[in-house]
Image 1 (cartoon, rainbow, N blue to C red):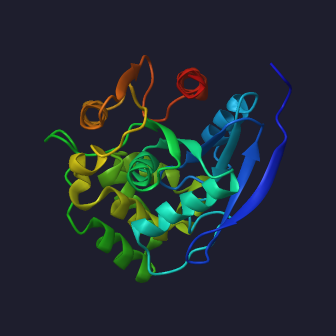
Image 2 (image 1 turned 180 degrees about the vertical axis):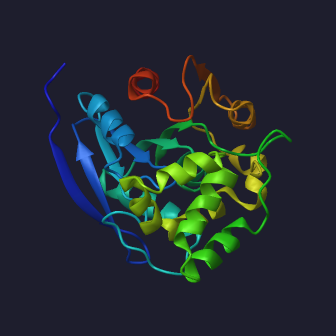
Length: 270
């Protein structure tokens, strides 16, 4: 395998003028990584996947709007985030394969409905709620998170998202407050409402919309993830014509790079 990939930073300009900053690794066909909640392009999972795929692909990892070095332009709409991805695709040559993780997988699905330039789509645990075992979220969850942020209660918004949407135990969240992660989480707290908007009221599966996708789709879940997440992955695969669903042994929602990369390499290289 070749040595460490050269990393080049770039900036794409979205349709509404918002600058979207990305890092590009390697060379070859384009692969774009779409991050999940609270993740920036420097997250170890994203950088690890990008570096591992770089010998075969040009891998672009970007800061979604409102995070890291990218800008943000109100009012928010899911369509703006699709346009952001389209802008990164244009910078990568106009078409790309896409990987989305968690809520980023839901955004990638929405983008695949709208953007014909997406050639293939790999998804890690899109967190739709398809049965009663999933956590119950209010239909106005996005509005509630926005209200907390606007009231200056960012820590409370982060805690609610982690406990209610991500099912992190309250005592674990309390422990997080003393870590460096917490300052970053509060900094991107306004974007938590964006994640809720991407997933829609109640995180309901948009099966009718994603049934329109006519590209190869791979849906991955972890064997050790909550059962409702595996059920959601299976439901996504059932809704998208021809999609493949795989469950990775000994993996939970915070998937290991070394478990994820072989699946992505096989899928994107076909």
